Image 1: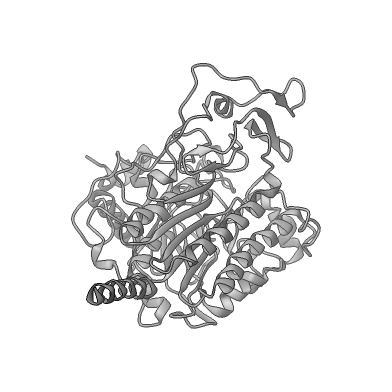
Image 2: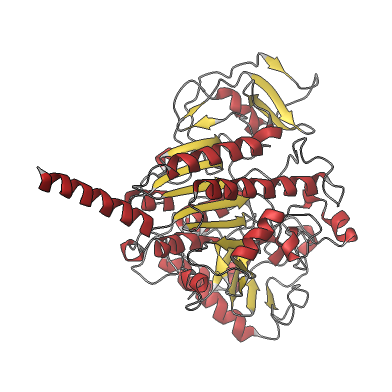
Length: 523
């Protein structure tokens, strides 16, 4: 009997020690926040909690998203795979779009969960919810819209959802727990979802701040308090998991801010020195980060918790960019363009990492990294790299060596994607944009304004970080080299070493690009 008790105690201690050996992991994703919006980067908007992260950890100065808009970047974070390999070749989903990630595709949540982590998500999913639908659209019990206001057809679909029935949500992509919303706060339905069901019926009709894209809304839902709700749910999740000493946890916290509708709560209204609601909203975004760190401190688990803070793309033009620049605040730094663009301002983002047990404070890395790299980095931090299979994380390069200052990430090149499906490929100082303009929303926008312009753009980012001097005519050999590399990575189905994989459908390049570069033609 004594031997049995000793064995049980020994086994329990082994489990606890093994759990302590692996870090807790928290990934915080801001929505439409630019590289220059942090005060530690010279911004005028106070971000004391992000400043604390930078002071106590590492700042990456050359960090990028795989896409310059929401849905595709989030796909890359979850799967470690470039978004354009999925069925979604351009644009974003809405609140009633079906699930984008197949349930047999391994996400970072699946991966860590299978290796003993508890996995939780709080916040904005925007990767599709497969709702069960009604045969006929319901009518709202109460509408806050002015008489004669017409709903957009794609958002009117929120009245076809059967909110009483379970849906396919993040818990079907590896998360043990989910509390959040389907998409952005300008995409109905406006209702909180817990695990696989809405917490209330969406019986009212409204939009927020103008109104933005009205549709079916839960009677208790108020977009103004989303960040407060997410902060509270995150703290409770951390406290609950900290009490379980047998396993580490992974918390994915994608926020709704400072994306439109720009709705800072009363605690932050009028507080930004820029005198803009966007500035107030950035301050509230920073506050959520502070709440997470406060709970880690309270639970005594900060030392072995790896926290990453970044954004899904650059600042949006709705973020009062010209007004801020006039004040001396540069939301996207000195980079050209903004959200949706193939230019640097569309996909170069803030990226901070704090992990006191492993990462020295006040350190910086100039390595080029991408948000797809989270999968491989989390795996290496948890000592699980050798369990990544060939059909997982096909475009994820670990930057763990940067964090521990034992080396540099081995990312040889980075591929970017704009809202209209335009590509860029970056290798060292060279960046090739396979489109004549922004590929997004800034000037010159795709279409009439790009007529007569060169079909492609080549920039030397060391000499010309603002992408102002197109060198494509002067360096045709660099152009061909980068196009050949892009063609190879598309056809291999991966950019990391490993067995060849397949993409979910061919990449729909414009015919003029295919005519100029036939190596991009796919079987």
